[in-house]
Amino acid sequence: MKTNLKFAAAFVAVAALGLAGCSSSTDSAEPSASATVSDFKACQVTDTGGVDDKSFNQTAYKGVTDAAEQLGIEASVLESQAETDYATNIQSFVDQGCDIIITVGFLLGDATMTAANANPEQPFSIVDYGYADGDIKNNNVLAQVFNTNEASYLAGYLAAGMSKTGTVGTFGGLNIPTVTIFMDGFYNGVQKYNADNDANVKVLGWNPKTKKGLFTENFDKLDDGRTFAQNLVDEGADIVMPVAGPVGLGSAALASELGTDKLMIIGVDADQYELDSANQGVYLTSVLKNMDVTTFDAIKQVFDGTFKGGVVVGTLANGGVGLAPFHDMEASVPVELQDQITALETGIIDGTIKVG
Image (cartoon, rainbow, N blue to C red; front, side, top):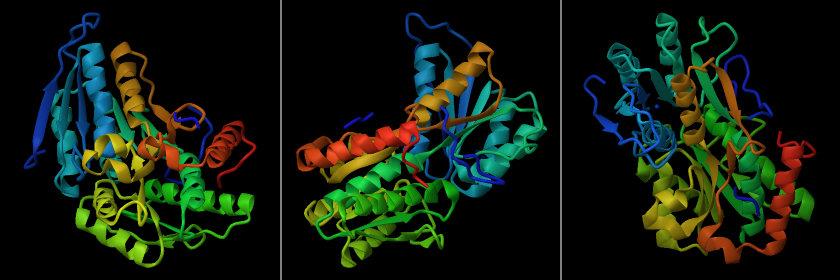
C-alpha cells in the first residue's frame, strides 16, 4: 500500500496542498555547511500537552528544529502549563522579537488572533485552526489545517478489515472539530468497508450524525487512555483509535499488557510506532498529520520574504496527511485488504470516492 479546515463559520475540506510561570527551553541548532547563519528566530508556543507529547506539539516542533538545522536559524519554544498561559506566552515571544511565532492547537485560536491583530507586522502560523474572512485584519497569519478525515477514512477501512470481533472503537480528547474530523473519517471508513464487503462491523465511541461520543476532556492524562480503551474492549472492540494526543499512550500501554490478539491501536498525528518505543508492537498504523512539513514551509516563507498568510490545507493528494506503514503488522494485513486500501486512497485523491 502507499504510505506515504477552515474552522470558524465552517470547517471545510479543501482539495489542495499549542511563559511566564511556565517551563521553557531554547534550542539553537548548528547550521549545515550550506546554511546561512542568521539572527532569524522561529518561536513555538505549545498547548498544555507540551513539546514532547509524542503528538502534534512534538511534530510541529520538528518543523521548527528542521528549519533551525537547514536554514541556520534559532529555534525557541515555550510550553504552556494551562490555557491561561497561551496569551502570556505569545506576548513573551512578541516582546522577544521572534521573526515568526508558531502556535499549536485549536485551543490557541483566539489568543493567536488577538495577538496577530494587535501586532499586524508580526508573522504567525497556527497549527489546526483556520479563521473566517475578516478575523485577521492584516493577513499576517498562515493557518495550517488538515483533511485528516481522508487518512482516517483509510484507517477505519483497515480497522474494519482487521477486526476479529466485528467491533472497533474510537474516543477523543475534546469534542472539537480538529478531533472529531478524525473520528468522522474513521466511522465513515468502517461503513465503506461494510458496504464493499457485505460486513457489519460496528463502531463504538462516536456517531457523526448526533456528534456525540466518548471524550476524556483532556489531552494529557494517560490513565484516561487506559480506562477508555479498556471500556471499549469490554464492549467488544479489538481495535481502538484514540484521538487525544498523549492520552493515547495509555491505550497503547494497555494493549501491550493485553496482547494484540485482544487490542490493537491506531495512532494519530505522527507515526506512533516510531515515537512510542515501549509499545511499538501494538500499533496497526497511524493517521499522519504532517505538521512538521507545513511548519517548516511557514518558517521558510518568512525567512525567504515570501510570507503572505492565508491558509494551507494538508490532503492525501499533497502528502499533508496519510497512513503510516504497518511496521510489525505488515505480514498480518492481508494483501487483498492492502490492495483495497490502495485503491481507496487513489479514489479519494482523484475525487471518485467521497469521505463525507
